[in-house]
Length: 249
Image (cartoon, rainbow, N blue to C red):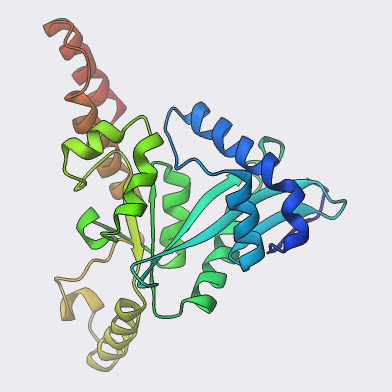
């Protein structure tokens, strides 16, 4: 791609892109077969005015991508939401650039907050992992009902509620600044003791470098959750689904 892409903090003057952004959010969710919290152009404009959004544009002024910040439980939790990239600019690393920028903005505005996200996309999970997020259970996320209401527009909402908001098709990932401080301390301890970090604290999560295994776990979780919601068409259908799953791995 020869076009130069600029990723920066959004400003009020970017408001004219709000409708384009929300339309693409809806289309992207439809194409994936999943749902996201529906946002209005007015909501996107508000995020731009508050300085809680990142926008990507070409050097000629063409819209490329967007993401915004939401805070919950008195700014104890922060979510980077609504990540979307224009179809013409996908598979060029734009999502990674936006995620890095919105993550940096979140850390600047909310240095003590836990940053979390819910996603079904393995590409986003990889980006999050590179930024320091770890897979977590839903119980480690915000308990704010307003956040969970945003899932009502998702096609998997019934699954979420049947699991009492403890599990769903999405994978929860969390960046905990306090945990990162502990990890740095572990590294220092390990260096002094000349031992691997996991031997000093085996109970701690360390998923980095083992994303393939994590990817398999994500697919397995989704397979199990969907299994209970598929229409029962007889033993042959069940057998076929199971064999397809085994073949996939």
